[in-house]
Image 1 (tube, helix red, strand yellow):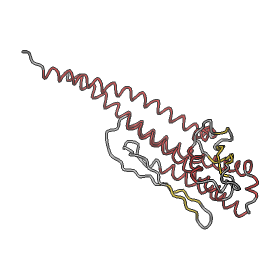
Image 2 (cartoon, rainbow, N blue to C red; image 1 turned 60 degrees about the horizontal axis):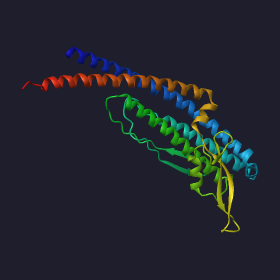
Image 3 (cartoon, one colour; image 1 turned 45 degrees about the horizontal axis):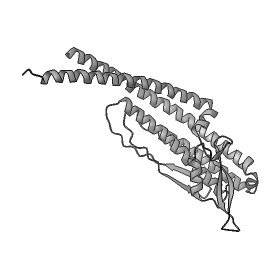
Image 4 (spheres, rainbow, N blue to C red; image 1 turned 135 degrees about the horizontal axis):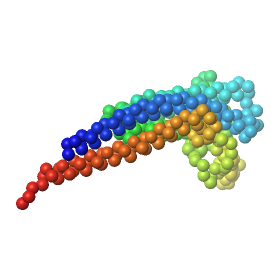
Length: 278
């Protein structure tokens, strides 16, 4: 019996070593992926903004002075740069430690030169616990959730910058732009170019407050899937992460199988230890 439990414990220890090694591979994989994603986000934000300014609202863009256009373009570049920095910051966490809730706090500030900065604060309080497949999966899920949150935040800030620059209707409340940044593909959206969302909204008529009118709004809506699809380098890194996820699934099955085997052996031993004949 002692030999059986010892073998199981050795198997569990071997699996835990494999999980720790996989955690490091995940960390390295995300490091490369997030760097590539930052470049991809920058490119897609600029392309989506270009389409919106030249194809969707060309008249509004032409009304801007040269300095106003440059100010808008610089603001978009600043947002992209801040996004790249925030993505890198999201990985300042060793994979083998617990990552409690990833909290994002963003503030927008427009400087004298017209720069719009995205400030993102990640609050991390690592707590050391035995590394298990579940904890590694939770770490990965928080990284992925953080990416989606950052894309929504960037979309919102880009739309606010476009609105302040006169590209998007001024009378639209910020809440409408926030909804646009969080929207997903649905029957309410209209198919269009990548990373742009076309929605129909109801607004008040300027001349008659009792009358409403339907307006088509095109806004920035950065989608992770579309960004990855448009960039072969980002997609290749995503495939690598999926391969690691497959390995993690296999280790999870083996790990829980061994845990159950150990529990069964321990239960059998406990039964015999407490049993006595009348």
